[in-house]
Amino acid sequence: MTASSLTPACDDAENPYMSEIPASTTVTLPRFGEFTYAESEVVNFPWGLPGFPTLRRWLILQLDTQPNFVWLQSLENLDVAMPAADPFAIFEGYDPVLPAYTFVSLAIREASDFLLLGVVIVGENAEEMTMNLACPIVLNLRTRHARQVMVDNTDYSMRAPIPRKAKQPAI
Image (cartoon, rainbow, N blue to C red; front, side):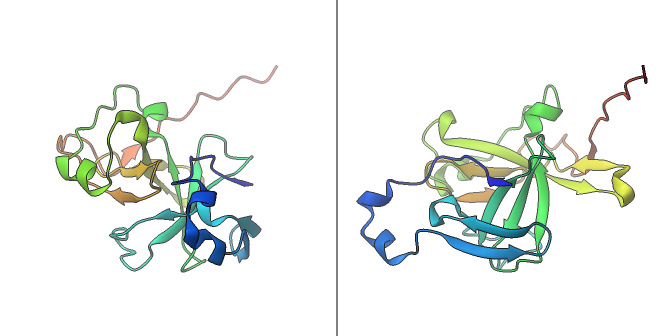
């Protein structure tokens, strides 16, 4: 398991406050076991997330066994983790219109500054999975600040069924 390879907000050598922060921290995650991360890997949600307004510090974890998904792992409540994925990789034609405040509030200057993640809801026994396309998470890769926003084109569902790959016939 690794933290997602996202660009840190700034060069640690240039930040005088980074000397006060440990180079790495190890936590025991109930879902994933022991994990060591650097402070530069933390994603901050200054406005919290719907349902988790006080949880502001998160990691994005990539599991080797789930290459198409990441896990948002809270650092303030280690019992809280949720799957997410790149909506563009799953839903062909996904074309959200992000509200203007998104770019201002997250200091996004250009398209290469950010990425979108859709929160995934997994049904019982993982038989059904849906993604929230109406309210993606917008992550500024430069500052590592993120927020969940409602897109301006509201044709998208909060529970869009994720298409299943056809089972390959046994040979």
